[in-house]
Image (cartoon, rainbow, N blue to C red):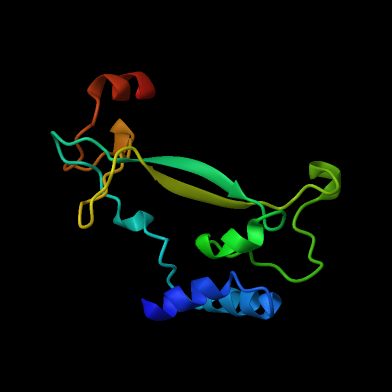
Length: 146
């Protein structure tokens, strides 16, 4: 845990950023670094009678720009690619279009106390639901999958 925290904080440093980022990319590819804010895998679907306390929101992080350097350590995603590598076809996507880092963030819908379980409505398809799954809101699920 401490090593991951030190590594993630190092992404916010100004000097040696390129080397630090390259090392983080290498480590991420080896699955040796665990980011202290990458906790989505701890969110469970609420059991019957309980409500979710977090919501999922898509957020695309720009790899550069004003303020990005100070917050980069918060983003567990690693953008992989060599220097000068074309990541998209300019004719298809347009020249100068920034390459975004796709992310999903969990936003608390109510205060979450230390040690409290994090619940996220999985909204699973009725066609493939496991036996343990209970819809949070049956009417909403009916509308969603109708």
